[in-house]
Length: 146
Image (cartoon, rainbow, N blue to C red; front, side, top):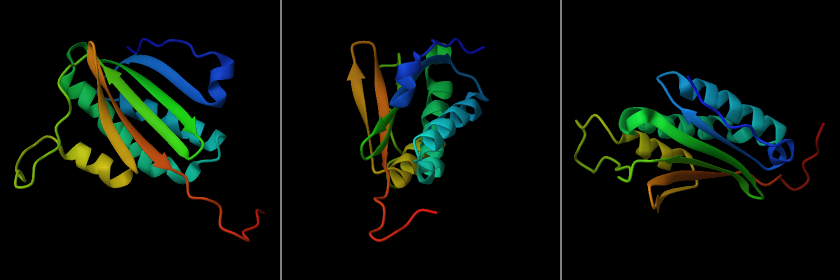
């Protein structure tokens, strides 16, 4: 069962924060929430990359965080989108090192790096935040909207 906080209406214009207890199918619901905001903000072009990156971060919580609690923050930025996933595990995520082709973990961060402009981690007093950013493409000069 997901335990969620309730966002204030004014917050929905620039961001969304919700706490979850995640399970095997939670990423699907979070992708739907993310997609809704991207459409609302006119950032539909970021949907595929952002959904894939969010799915990988949520999967890491499901696999590695005791209790599977996390907070997801979706922020509209002037350049595009920032998503943060905060959990209570102090250990930072570790991507697969070159030559670890048979390792079963860590490939998700390689995907996050491949589909986003930037990503990183921020250690906290109790836990960490893993974040990524996707930039919107500027409108082409001379392009007209229909």
